[in-house]
Length: 200
Image (cartoon, rainbow, N blue to C red):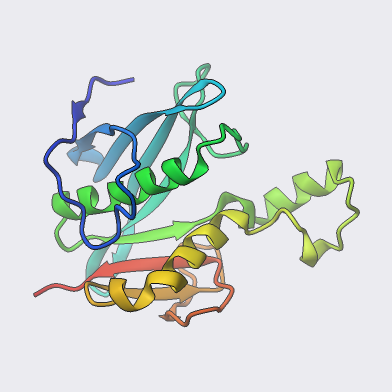
């Protein structure tokens, strides 16, 4: 793990820090890779290092699009692992902390756009889940699929009117990086969300 700086005196934009109940976040910009790495410690049944990694994907409406990757630090590989749920009994605080990193990215890349997808929306996730599933779900109705993106959708649906003052949102029904998008519609089951800060 690289040495990082503590993000202090950074005021997140409207509701992106939905609660004051967030962890201290450390991180660093990686300009040569057009990336931002953030990390913090989840404190629950055990201490778990969490990583938030923003990586440049492509251009979107003429602006740089960054994928938001989130998961635990794999102690063996030193890389981000988003394959398991740690269930550390602090999920609201963890979610609020992840949200609070978005304004940090947008301060590094003023015209940046953020793409959020869930790793549990991929065909590989459902294939792996089916091998050990005790619920015998029908393929397209996997009960464990899409839970991660649903958390973001529920937050956005609840606070859409306020957040829409500062951000434009797009939804995508596919999980590929170049999946077609449309203006976000509340209560629609998107598999991806694109967050675009309105530029003044």
